[in-house]
Length: 200
Image 1 (cartoon, rainbow, N blue to C red):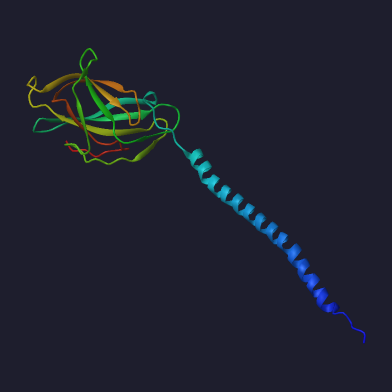
Image 2 (image 1 turned 120 degrees about the vertical axis):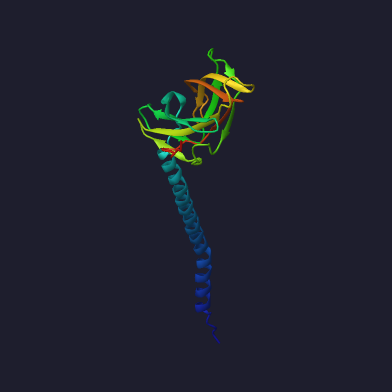
């Protein structure tokens, strides 16, 4: 009796083995390709915001880019006195300010005197808080400085001739004539803002 080999089973087995043999590498290549595309997309998405942020970054105003001046003089009862200080951008470029000025007192020989700066509300104005101010060329920001002078020449009073104004994040200061008596060298000042409402 002649036996006929089961060619169908063998053919199916061969095809199955071929699929197993060649199908896995194809899937593997597709998976690797997919991972590569995902990684590329992730890199592109991560890089785009950074590049955009860098392009939009505004440099901080340096002391050399700013002109300091006094604005409105402030007076009132209870020996209070104050003044609005202004920093104007004259750099020819846009720059940014954020925060409070550093203040100092000098005598007529430009020697430093004892001084203490207090950031926040003053007798004349509420503190606007720290905000980033973008100043185009020619634009300015202001802050309000206040102090008391109980009695000219009394003990604890500091007789100043100049006021030092250090812009936020700067290491150099501007100097303005400031012939004032300041009790204990204590100065209060608000943060910079485009405009601050004052009472006098």
